[in-house]
Image 1: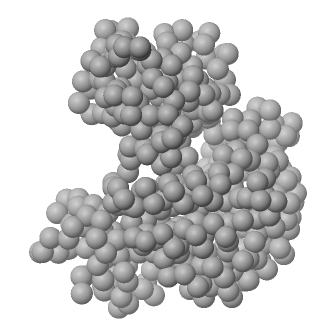
Image 2: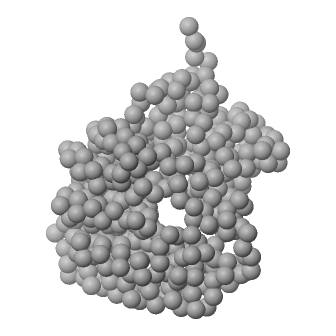
Image 3: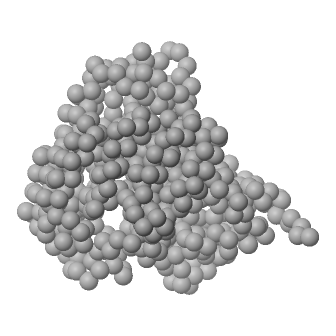
Length: 435
């Protein structure tokens, strides 16, 4: 009979990078908790003795943050503040051999798919029956739900397939079971995430099954909002939009990374569609779901990007007036096909181009927000900060989009929905009064 030897241990999980990493950390914490091990996310009290750093290896800035975090934890260990430092996630998956040599103070390194192996370090069993039973690091009223792992795309700039492998879908039954469990925990909003949502189901159902999944999820009692993140534009299954239009609890919100608009850049990025395809797709989406909020991400400074390409991208934003836009500067990643291209633009020039593009979007965002003044919206209260409440409409996702700032003399419970009249609008935020 196995005896528990780690009851006195307290494990702190530090998560870097995207929401997909956050879900991985939550799953790890759920497994540790089920094995009777005390585990926390981002423990501020610093009364833990073991740290797991879940790293990001997506772009240069993320890699730098991950390495600095690892070094900080190793330094704490060397000063006797910690017993063990473990590292997992994308950076560890991609650069494990190099990192082992450079940072010998780490006790063990794990890849993105080595959860059972990591649990052995804690004398913990991998409990496969724990579908959806994870310790949330988000407020209890919303959660991210990962529907697949990996990616089969070959975008020239992206190292994700190197770190996460090929696309593997979860079954509809497994995802629905996880959603039901999250609702029992108090979750009212789930954000569907994957490297690419629209590829969902092709591997196990031999068709793009996201529309079917959405129907099943929208039938889950108590699930108020379902939000779609990371939908790939090439071969976009428009049937998703029909389900979105028919089901009240699927947010009229779509996150669709476009990356660029010029055919020159789209070809170099291996995006598998043209400028005209994108214009037509945006029009089709808005035609099927009037009033939908479209969010996208773009890349500035890709190898070979000309001033004409930048101007084309700015014109595209003015033409289609996307609701939300985020922008990255190009990061030259080893073992991607774009790594063979000459990365001639300076960091300063890339950032200047990104700023130039965002200034166009900032004006569009301000104008769109001004149009909301005097209108009523259903708002989910996320938190109270500096004496005021912060919430979101169905058109806004967590951290990346607008917040609604609410002054209220009466208490607004966190996680409740309220009707709000918008009274002021800024570039990226709104102010309102509870009705």
